[in-house]
Length: 263
Image (spheres, rainbow, N blue to C red):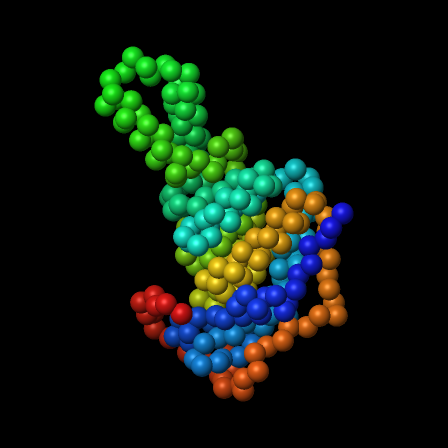
């Protein structure tokens, strides 16, 4: 049975080491940052690799017990990989926006899920055949909307056992609701996030689609094979060959909030 091997070199190649610019950082992430390069934070990938292995081991162990995982990733470039991962591992997903109350008002979400399934069955069986063309069109639109927003939760009758989140800063509502209801969170946390509120944080670039896809592939391999994570102790991360310009420790004050900018 194959084992998921975490490659620090692969993390470098996919751009996982790049954080945000210095004006867009959270001081609580300082311990996971290696240096500053061209006014941009660089993650310590040795720590990232270790924490990624710990997160994979946790998900693997819980998955063997039959625990279910909800994957959350609403960025355009990772929607498809998230859906594929959830379907391949028989879990759930959210790739549109997180609806407020998704967890804290889960009873209402269940009602919407049951409504969606009921409407889909009636449509397939022809029960709406006697309806007018306009009425059938409105019903089809309702089904499409529900499918888009909560279709990835179909069959979920209770809260998931684990939530895996890409970009915990963007999905802060999902993090907040999960913590409130004591659902363990595994999350990819960028330099503007807060690893302290995540049970199993993976500190790295959450905007690099190749890096995130690599992590999702590791998760898929780990959960599909139900195998323990293989730790490759001999490998070390190779940081880009550039001179250190400034260390995070020298940044004494957190900058004022600024408008989000492209890295």
